[in-house]
Image 1 (cartoon, rainbow, N blue to C red):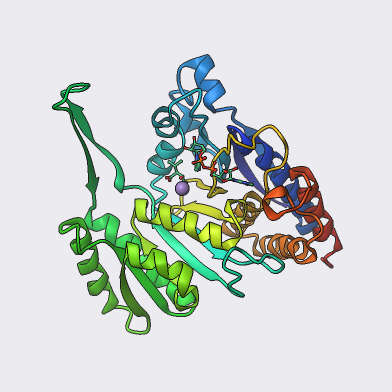
Image 2: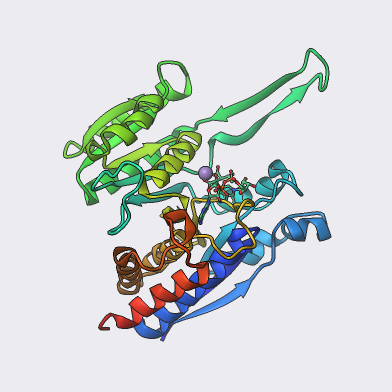
Length: 354
Ligand code: NAD
Ligand code: IPM
Ligand code: MN
């Protein structure tokens, strides 16, 4: 029997709530589809920071390296630990250390969910650069707390980094509608984004079967809302992709639906799967967070591990639950708990003929 080692990092706030019950969905799927999931839980979080003075141990990355995948809830509790400490101490270093340069975020309106646009259909795959760009961490502050203070945050775009993410976008376009939207702000940012446009044009010659359109990020943000059906695969830099994927999530019906796969397509390191959303301090501790984004991220993880049938069954089960409109958390106007939604997905999974 195939067996996979998964590192669980529940993190903070609703991260702990959605990860626990999503893991029970994955466990159920493993039993039905004949593979084993072994897990080890790492308590790395803001609580861990307050006790230990760091978000993870010094050898945290080395500990994770032994796993097939990492399944993460959410990190951050800004009232207790600054985000600049918590995210830069855990989530962002994992993405960088394993060179998880693709952040793949599918946004699809599920059956039974209308979303704010009542769009009928919405199906966009966002490919977000995940290791450099605006998140390079280069910069500094001088003359702090004086009237002359200057803060600089430098975006770093390397040829290797830009080429590989746009190429991945083209490859994904080939698996879908052969339509790629490349996102920049090259009308205002004359170095990095002009460079991005040049790389897009160069690669386009290698993919004559893919229709490429360049968009400015402000214009495509509007297009997500007004003409989403004209978009298919969208490739964007780290920050632009971050922002567009919260818009994508909103159109899907909310942050409780959007899943995220942090991938190193070359393999040899654990990839990481998580919801797009954060720890949601405003609803944490009440057991009412929507777990579907995290369950869906779990399906992306199983697909990545090679368990495509189990992954498809989980997505189908999620959709069986949303279609019935019976078991819904408050973000969808319902009264169900996180746990009840996960149990409904498990019941739907059990009802599928395997
Ligand atoms: P957030 O995504 O946590 O919450 C934004 C809003 O969406 C809130 O009103 C919240 O209640 C709602 N929401 C989010 N997920 C939901 C779910 N599953 N079900 C129902 N409602 C949901 O964003 P934020 O408030 O900007 O960030 C809170 C903390 O999380 C911060 O520390 C932030 O840095 C961190 N964060 C972490 C990650 C991550 O770990 N990947 C992602 C985003 C934000
Ligand atoms: C995400 C989050 C993170 C990001 C934050 C918490 C650093 O918003 O995964 O979308 O910006 O990448
Ligand atoms: Mn984000």
